[in-house]
Length: 388
Image (cartoon, rainbow, N blue to C red; front, side, top):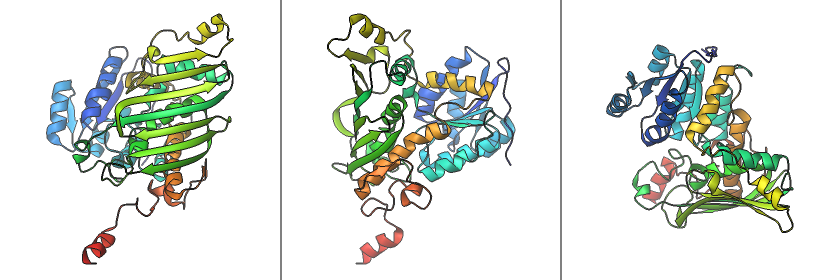
């Protein structure tokens, strides 16, 4: 049964629960919550993990009073206002729905969930507009002073129209990385580098350039023996006419994350790896642009790094007002739709257009789209091969 969300005032403490006590919870979720708790009324009341030793140690080290191995039990007993999910993607749909039905807002790690069908099922459980609860996705690269400044410049076309873009997530993952049995699988990891790694830069690209209109793509397994791809490339046309290339790889020893956008009067470029500051952005004016104009474009202001903390700060403010947060609803769905379209274009060889992948389309319910050579083999297929 759905429970109506309440909106804590700025004086009321927000009750937060962390679900999943692995690396991302320890490195990102807990530090962000702890930092913000020093500035505003916020209490981490519980943590949940199926491993009792892991959650027990996590709570003991963090001073969290209530460890749980059962999400439903925690929701019923602790009644958190916010649940942060630091669990594998295959659990996100059920865990998010359970939290929303209990009246809690949700902040869920990327990848958001394995399919558009799962995402739409989550969105259907959200509360009324202007009230919530809502489920937001961790897309922290959108946040911070650098991304905000460039987004504003592009929105008002201060540097002219955006024309050409490049989005690059070229990382390196060796055989040891894929020795974990859940990696490189559709069911557990949710996809290859397009879904699990490059989605961050593609989300930032969408946040800067706006809606896309069509995509063509290729994907391959060039090194690793996995279900998913280990490299993909794509060509994207945006509604504003800009065209972009996208590369997602786990085969690249010289690791970098990069976005470059060439506008009529300047090139803006971000080069980093896992997070960015103002100094990681560079704006190069076209010949003839006045120095004072270029200096104004380069005025990024106070340095607020992209981070979980930067995104979470805004989410907590949204909770107190009942406002839908960024990266929730349609704003969160757009990046998953683009990733879905990339796989569909790569596996079918067709140009895929925005909005065309809906119920009844095999790619709506699974990113591999049941494509031959990409979809996981059924047990019947495996038995047939063994007996052949």
